[in-house]
Image 1 (cartoon, rainbow, N blue to C red):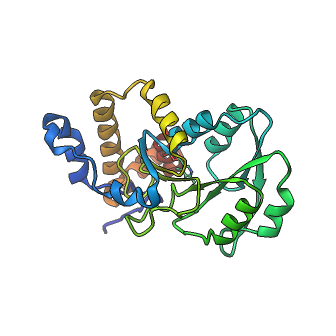
Image 2 (cartoon, rainbow, N blue to C red):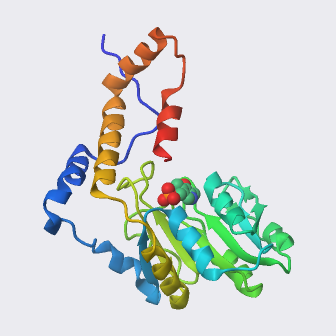
Image 3 (cartoon, helix red, strand yellow):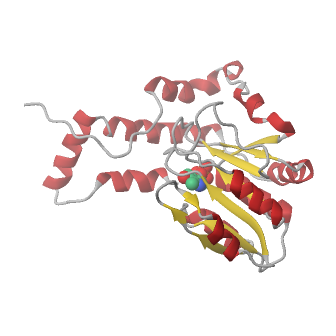
Length: 258
Ligand SMILES: *Cc1c(COP(=O)(O)O)cnc(C)c1O
């Protein structure tokens, strides 16, 4: 009897893409600026490509240079790092609960949390959904609050390139995201002065080497092989045999988060 076991997380990248990534440095002419970037620069937004969404968000906060103690309203569900970045800038994250029926924040609740110290709202489109931003945009404009749209879980090609009236839209191509490139992010920025500052700051950052990228491709190639259901079932039996009764998907999740 054949037995399969499907891991909860499947890397959304093909073996062909991994092979392309591994050998791309041999022929630089194959590596082009993706044409998709043009679609993201609609509405005169500046488009910046960064290592990750977290990099772009951190650069944006550096460029904004808000006074310490400024309150940042944030959807209560997001990865912990986004909140840590806010704290590292001396800003105060204020969680905003969402309605589990539509994954959107309640506008009355949002209004009640706005104080004279609130300057930003970080909204996230979760689990592949895209929420209606109109009421949120209206509220933010009324209170002169900058709006960031975290689309790290909402990339769907050029079908959605970010809302026109938000201050920044962020798309992630990190290892556990759909359409992953094992890293990278797109940031669409409304204010060109801020975008220029971000470019200047990012230019000072150390560059990741070809070797770093090749190692990364090999690591995820290994994880992808292990997550083939026919292989995965044996991996789990082996782990059990060795006395590790653990949830392997949690481990791969952790490794992918790096
Ligand atoms: C993954 C994720 C991020 C971080 O994306 P990176 O490109 O890995 O920095 C931010 N926000 C949400 C909602 C995410 O799911």
